[in-house]
Length: 417
Image (cartoon, rainbow, N blue to C red):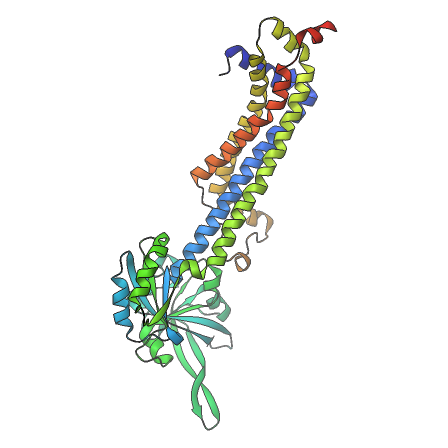
């Protein structure tokens, strides 16, 4: 514990007007380095957490926690299979779907390729498509020949809610003149923005029965999407799901969200750990400045230390005085940096929009980063870990100079005064 007189002496030594210009400047840079290091580390880790959570949740929201695909892209008797899968513990809902790729055009010549997802109208909002994502139209109008378009593909087509679009399937019917593509006109019931560019660029949702007819699939589907009550249980539930698919004679294969996105999740986790180590070096570099400032301070105050020793101050007291000097810089920089970093991360989207309006430049490109805005998730335990690491580095950096100060021989110092 630091005693009262030790705190008083430490404050007198570390204040710029008492410690000297050189010590004050170096201590100021030490404070600034730790402040920026802690703030940047919290902001970057929060953004990376947000990126991982948003990206995985949006991908899982559309593709589900697991997908049971029929062999050859065709699953027969899917209602029975869906009932068997729904009976497995921790399975909340199952959503049969038809999936295919088509060309999409609209009057005026615009065209694009789309990934069609055929869903029953009652299953539409059981996936990631929710009413708050609708930018035009209404999901209630979905059904029959009325479809849902994702925002980016709708923009490319120049299509709005209520507009007609034509789906073109290259594999059509055979004619004496060759194979004629199959065409069918649909009406856009709603335009949605999922926030994930991968889906906003290509997704087109049509009613399941309409998709079965248009793609001539009969009473079959491509597969069944499964949603659990907890995505982290998928590894424990997967064996039961595979057993429900038929055991030794399965009717389809099962892929979990970890299997589908394993490379992405592993890369995000690795990048997060590496960034933590790299940004911690900023704090370490700032700690070297604390060492430098304390060494200069000890050299300047060696006579004072000798006098304190002759007046009865023990070596432990001298050690604590100079540790308090360095800790004051480190602790203050850490606490203020943690506050600034947390505040910045909590308002990062508003800051992004403000900077874009101020500079007129696009700071966040959804086509490159997959998400429509900068995400940030502040984890209290992670912030506490950053603060703890900064505290430890700051305190350890005070030891060399403090040990040197406590070992000063007052006789040798005062002999020449």
